[in-house]
Amino acid sequence: MLKTFPKKHLAAVFMAGAAISVAAIFSPSSDVEARRLSVSLDLETGQVTEQPASARLQNLSESAPEPVIDETAELAQEGGEENLESMEAQSLRKEIVEDIALVAEMEQKKQESQLTWTDYLVKSGDSLSGLFKKAGFSDGLMLSVIHGEGEADKIQRLYAGEAISFATDGEGELAAIRLQRSRLESLLVERTDTGFVGERVIREPEVRNTFAEAEIYSSLFGAGQSAGLTDKLTMELAGIFGWDIDFVLDIRKGDRFSVVYEELFLDGEKIDNGRILAATFHNRDRELSAVLYTDENGVSDYFAPDGRSMRKEFLRTPVDFARISSNFNLKRRHPVLNTIRAHKGTDYAARTGTPIKAAGDGKVILAGRKGGYGKAVVLQHGNNITTLYGHMNGFTPGIRSGKYVKQGQIIGYVGSTGLATGPHLHYEFRVNGAHRNPVTVKLPDAAPIPKARLAHFRAATNGMLAQLETYQDTRRITLARGE
Ligand SMILES: [Zn+2]
Image 1: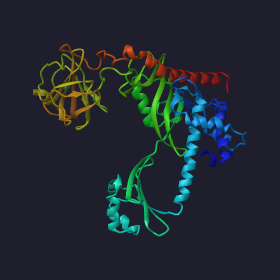
Image 2: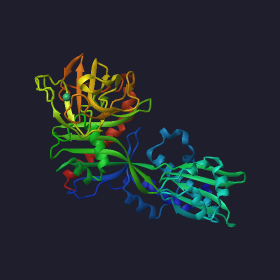
Image 3: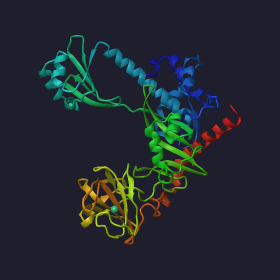
Image 4: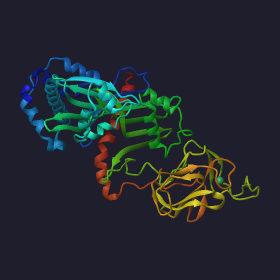
């Protein structure tokens, strides 16, 4: 396959791989509040490679010396020794593999070029039969497609907004159907000698790690936008640090953050953001860092560099978009009974139907009516802590005594059952049976990385954290020089 590869193109690929390390990192202007660049991070070695898109394109168009084809061909075959390869070798190998695939695709396209493709957008109300008719094919043919091998029958599941394409050969016979479900997923049904065969085709987006940083002038979201972050990504960033920083009360002008996150590309075009891999937040005089780590069970979560969880064992507030309508107060006059009666929890006013989340992992010990609390859930957690959720409108299906719930899992919805003047959540937090103020009680940290896993955790995350540091330093030097 490599023999048929256009030599000039391979040379250009080789150069692109080699040129990455000399590409400029930052734009020289200093008045830009925030900036981004594409980076490749090697988690094992901590090596970093910057690759601004413009530098890549330039180098592809430049003439290049004769490449060492033998070596690169070897690299392309050494899939089993990935960890030992250098960053350059890996990216070079990847490019070559991609280009071999490209050539294969071109050859296939040549064969397919005898086929004529006709595309239709699936609209609401369209049926497969109707689309077959539009393309000039019968219901009988449609049935033999549906009854084909593999996933051919899945062609019946059509959704508005998808695109369906029919391929006819030189004789006008149906040769293939492609149903494009999304940018990444399609269903291809092809005619073979033994009938139609369907296959789900999934494309993997290319993941590029990107660095961004911003200083907060007015708001967190304003800073995020100036750094090129979507609001969704900024929300995720706030979610990571939200256990330690109150983004409403604690944020000050001059606070800043740095973040390395994934960008997903398809055919060179950005289609989405991936995960935040590491981030640092400078809030007034403290600096918090978090790094994403996936444990041996495949569960990913954010941890401080020393292995402490970024999360607490409990959510401070089990409802979003709510305001405190009544505080914990042991001498309160009850609004319905009009007598002095301790208010042993916190009330959060919210619309009826607002989801209520389990504050922490635990076991349901009550999900039902409980006097003045109305419909209520009580959860038993570790450390002899229980939480209670009152006046609920209803429970999430499956929430009943004996069931285990995870932190953040929706257990039911805000209502006004029991003794309540309006829709709100009454939330109680008890330690060893004693009521504590849910707003001020000190919340224990969620479980840290177990001691036995610490070495693995450090090995897996040190490179990423070092890179975050390197970017910040480079940025500081650039600023100090007044560039
Ligand atoms: Zn209450």
